[in-house]
Length: 149
Image (cartoon, rainbow, N blue to C red):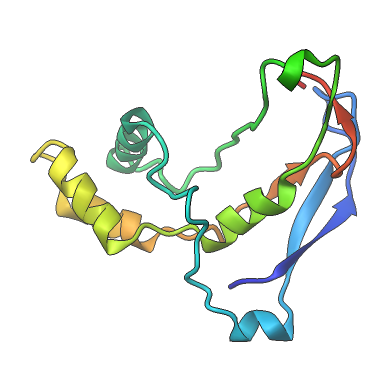
């Protein structure tokens, strides 16, 4: 379901030195009216490399696709040769997660690209993926952050 996101303070993650927030979704009345299939025109689920799709297949094939996984989003260097960066862009990441789904053309492309040995049920699985169980821990927008943090 679409919704706006609210953050509640949580404990600081042991491997980080900054405060983290947990993002929870709260549906608003206008969200129920809005088209919930809209996606960013540039950032799409297939904007990845085949390694990620192949790993998803390996997890699915081994029955681990429902296991809990953790992913980090970070940067390696400050832009513009700066000494620090101001964290921004959380809303765009959340919008991406909110509308994440593989389109029929995405699935067709993957069927044509992946080996013929890939079971049709894997593509059914990809078609049904949602982000309803995703938990996002993020630094507050506007905070100073550093590379690899």
